[in-house]
Image (cartoon, rainbow, N blue to C red; front, side, top):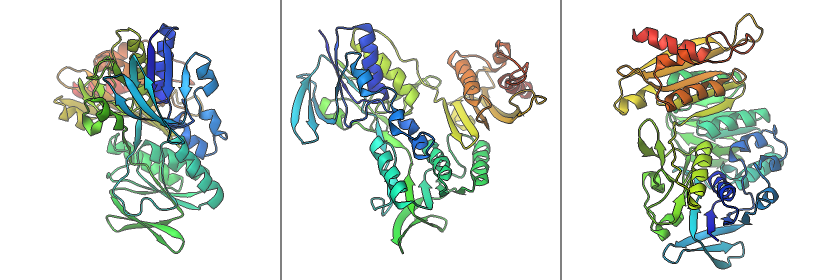
Length: 450
């Protein structure tokens, strides 16, 4: 019987365990979980804090009981502190600081990521919160409940920062979002970033761009956030959401090679440089399918795929990771923003000859009530005419997420922009048009190239 040990009980670890058990019921699977919340949706935290998901327990993809019913062993509240890859054993420590050694035949590391702690004076004082784990969310929830803050500064205008701006506005709190880039959400072009900023401002969220926060101070019972360009703002609470970095403390002890930002280097089978050790999720480098090189791109969807592959290969499989395109979507109030592939500047840096065309149309036939505008950017290579990327902003009920998935699928299969017009897409007036907006945007790109 194979002993499969998995470190980390989030997306990658649980996916690895479930896939291994699917393929080989005889495998002995144990997951070491640092806290008592295996398989919880970290992506759902903003919706718990907004009150839209009243019970935090509902954030569990599966309960601990459902996991153990599959024959998987859960070792909760145990932290892995070192790996002896020669003896194939892992030292773990429980809450009472008691040590124990666990042996393995195959090991999967899925330790995930931790929030970046920027160099800001006063980051560790009361009322200032990082947000990534369930424990973080409980701390924020406790502060919201007991202190009843009336104002908050959110440092970071990425996905989590914007979702938290929505969440806390939902709670009746005055929100200010501070970002370093000239426009909101630097993973999309400035035009869409400006649409996001306008949406935030329409909900009374103050937006401060091109600001580098350098200090947080206590003054007269409030926090004051200071930054470049003479920025200063009083608030009852501060949330820091400036990104994550891979949690790879165990890598050195195991002799694992690391690369970008300290992420573990893996091959397409999610194997590391050490025999019988696999790694997956936010702690590893990720192969970008278009660039054909490894980057650091932490995404929950990617972690699930990589974990599944690691689990399959750990029990004798030969599956390879197909690569990521960085496909993402975020809901901000009643707006959805999505992207996939490469933006124009990214394509240029990668050696492509890109053309990006902006296009605006309705999400369904305008004669049917409720039609909303979609703003679409299509990026293709002028020489090969291949689709390289796309961005969409529109109403969250306008199928923004599924429409970016069409572009993602097209890029995945190396389609040319003009080929999108040939796709057999569904149509009914309340939901689309005879030419779907995705196809109309592709046709606008082809027309401009001609």
